Each structure stands twice: as C-alpha cells, then as structure tokens.
Amino acid sequence: VKNTTIAPSTRPHVIIVGAGFAGLRVARGLRGAPVDVTVIDKHNYHTFIPLLYQVATAGLEPEAIAHPVRRIVAAPNVRFRLASVTGVDLQQRRVTTDAGDFAYDYLVLAAGSVTNFFGLESVAEQATTLRELDDAETVRDRVLSSFEAAAAEKSPARRRALMTTVLVGGGPTGVELAGALAELRRHVLPRDFPELDVSQARILLLEASDRLLEAMPQRMQRKAFEKLRSMGVEVQLGARVTDADERGVTLSDGERIDAAAIVWVAGLRASPLAHALSDAPLGAAGRVIVSRSLNVPDHPEVFVIGDMAHAGGRDNPPHPMVAPVAIQQGGLVAESILRQTQGKKPRAFHYKDPGTMVTIGRSSAVARVYGVPFTGFVAWLLWLTVHIVWLIGFRNRALVLVNWAWNYFTYERGVRLIRRRR
Ligand SMILES: Cc1cc2nc3c(=O)[nH]c(=O)nc-3n(C[C@H](O)[C@H](O)[C@H](O)COP(=O)(O)OP(=O)(O)OC[C@H]3O[C@@H](n4cnc5c(N)ncnc54)[C@H](O)[C@@H]3O)c2cc1C
Image (cartoon, rainbow, N blue to C red; front, side, top):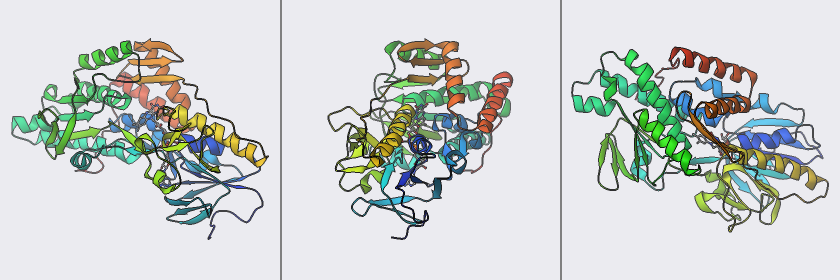
C-alpha cells in the first residue's frame, strides 16, 4: 500500500474521513494523544451548515461560514489530506482515495449525508439543493437571476412565474429559508427592482405531511405556520411534489405551480460512502447500522458516526441527523479509540438532546431547549447566541456579527451577487 500520509511510526494511525461536525470533534479529541491522526476531506474547509440558508438568501458571504480544516485541527500529531474517499477495504484496513491509498489502524467514517430526492429524477434535475456551500451560492444565483429575468419580461404571467420560488420540505431548513426569502422580498428586492411589482412575487413552502417542523411540539408548529403566513409565505400542507420541469413543479393532485426557482430541502440520506463498507448493514436513509459503541459489526477498529450512522442496531430508532448528535458521537469515539489503545472496552453512546431552534426571519424564532419551549424575540436571541458560539473561528464570528448587525439596522443584504448566471 502506498501510504502517503505519515512517516513510519509505531503509534496507531487513525484515519478520519470527513471534517464536518463529527469528524472534527474526533480530531480535536485526539490532539496531543499518543496516536497519529489523518483527517481526509474533499474540501479544505469545514462548512457551518446551519447557516447555509443565510448564504442562499444573500445575508452572509460564503467565507463567513467556512473555515480551513488545517487551521482547526492544527496539532503535531494531526495531518490533513485534501482528497475524495472512494472506498474502504475492511480486511486490508485501507482507505482508497483519488489521491492514493491510506492504511489505518482505526478508521472513523464521518462523511455526512447527501440530498434525498426519493427517486424523483425530474425533480433532481431541476431543483437546487442546500447541503454544501456551493449549493447555497447556486440558490442565491438562481433566485436573483430569476428576478433579473423578470425585470426584462413582457408577459405578466411569465413575469410572476419568474418571481416565484418554490421550497419543498417543511422542516427547519424549509422554514428558515422561507422566512429569510420573505424578508428579502419585503425589504430589499423592492428597492433593487423599482421596475417590478415585487408584491406579486410568490414564495411557496410545500410540505407533504400535515405539519411543519415535525420534531417540534405542536404549539411551535402552529407558531411557525402562522408566522410564515403573516410574512406572506404560501404554506401548503399535504402538498406532495411528484414532477418538475424547467417551468415549475407538479403536485400529486395534478396542481401545477409555475416557478423559476425550485429548492428541494425535503430529505437527506447517508453519504454514498456507506455502500463502500461491504460487510456493514444499512438502515433507513442508507445509514450504516453500527453498535451502541458506534463501530461496524465485527470491526471494533471501524467507527461510523454523524449523519452516516444508525446507532444501536436496527431495532433502535435512528438519531436525528443534527449537529449535536454528530458532535457527541465524535467526542465518544475519540475517547473510545484511546481506551482501545489501552486495552479497554469502548463505551456505549447515549444522546443528550439539547433541543431544536428554528429562526423565522427577523427577531422571531421557535426553540425547545432541554425541553423548555421559547418563542418570539427571546427564542431569536437564544438562536443568535448559540450560532455565534458554535461557529468556528474568531474571524467568522466577527464577520457574521457585523453582517447581522448591518442587516438588522439597515434592512440591507450586502451579498446580492450573481456569480454564475443561469
Ligand atoms: C441546510 C441544512 C441546515 C441544517 N441546520 C442544522 C441546524 O440548524 N442545527 C443542527 O443541529 N443541524 C443542522 N443540520 C444538520 C447538520 O448539518 C448535520 O447533522 C451535521 O452536519 C452532520 O455532521 P457530520 O459530521 O455527520 O457531516 P457533515 O458535517 O456534513 O460533514 C461531512 C464531511 O465529509 C466530507 N465528505 C463527504 N464525502 C466525502 C468523501 N467521499 N471524501 C472525503 N470527504 C467527504 C464533506 O466535505 C464534509 O466536510 C442542517 C443540515 C442541512 C443540510
């Protein structure tokens, strides 16, 4: 095996695939430990995914929510490799990448998730997604380009379609996107496009089930629904998208909605890398079924964590795909690897749910923190504080705070750039 990573060493070599919330937590937990660590990611930066929607709605520049991995994991025993992992050989203990093979003693797979279109190919072709930094820029480009096209359009019907954005999926991302887009439409676009009657612009939030924010208490679901409606978002529950083309979407009951921008935020599934583990069983959403201590059956040296993992066996309900699960699992796995190097057994994972927060535009949010519900301005302040604390890097925190303060007091959105015109 060509091991391009480290000089020969007698210390165990830990490979971590993915510098997301889970992988970085493992790397940080192993800093200064008697192991050599290689973090591999296809990007040289970590993305703070919870704020992608703000990049998508011109509230933040992409750089404000990304941070170089090398800077985050800097430690004498930790190395970074920029590479896409393509396979894992569990028998030979080797990882295959587009930049060579790497041998490991311990492997942590934390490659996250990808958008799930549930087999709707036409939708996958037409819709934009929101999972990576590039996606967020694409959504922004698409919404703003459509308004530019509307400004040049003669037909009123076509003009209205060009000013219509369809968001599919009433989970936290759909709700946050809808709120932020409604504010863009209210405060920013009318000034930018004096030639357009922006009050004609439509934002539709389509949800297949009978409620928004499934994981939230009913009272919060209602609050979110009412708040979005009061902001002029057309929320449609029980609306299942079955088809899409370049002019819009079709619902299961045959209704047709003409729209220039379709954003699909209706589901995620585990990274396709899950299939590389030939011996490992897969559960719902293609997540790898791992033991309570988060390792692949019969492979105590291989851990799968974060969005990729379904912990505790098939009969255990999967944990939600959220950052706190990924971070807590990363902490446990760093500890487990060190315990195993000392001949001790790994411990079982127990999730401590800190709750959920969803912001709905300016000064408004719904939150459940350790079981206690919050709404309105207090929830929004909590949301703000938690996201600033979570963000990695002082520079990013400063950038985000300055942007938010600027947007808040001026009703502006500084990043209304179309970088790739469709
Ligand atoms: C739009 C959106 C908003 C969200 N908002 C919230 C929120 O507000 N709060 C919350 O708790 N959760 C939120 N989540 C969920 C949360 O982001 C995930 O649960 C979390 O990121 C999972 O962490 P992870 O480490 O498993 O994966 P990720 O953080 O996605 O990290 C995976 C890493 O693996 C890398 N990678 C992938 N494939 C390969 C490969 N083949 N080779 C090399 N590297 C690879 C990726 O580049 C990435 O850096 C949101 C998710 C989305 C999509």
